[in-house]
Length: 100
Image 1 (cartoon, rainbow, N blue to C red):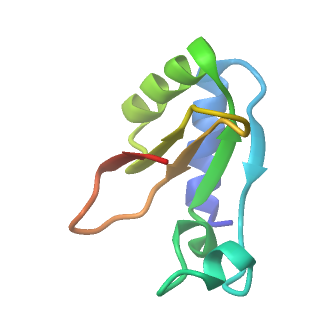
Image 2: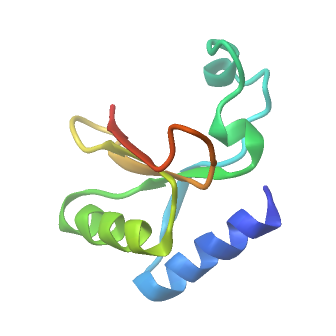
């Protein structure tokens, strides 16, 4: 994981003032999810995590992540395995927010 990303994540956790369960962190390019992609994604860059969270807690963390300057936010809030994806990638399509 990139130290700058981890520092931003820790700042978010400090402001959120509650545990944040990381359900996915760094993934090597050979990880099954990354291997399906045309090129490795944010998790393989060491600049992304998925936080297992739902309901009003997810809404609160989403708002705080936007204020903290995370550039990629993915929202999975249906079915089982609900989470928020947070990353700090930069580029022409950032900032970006999407749903799964």
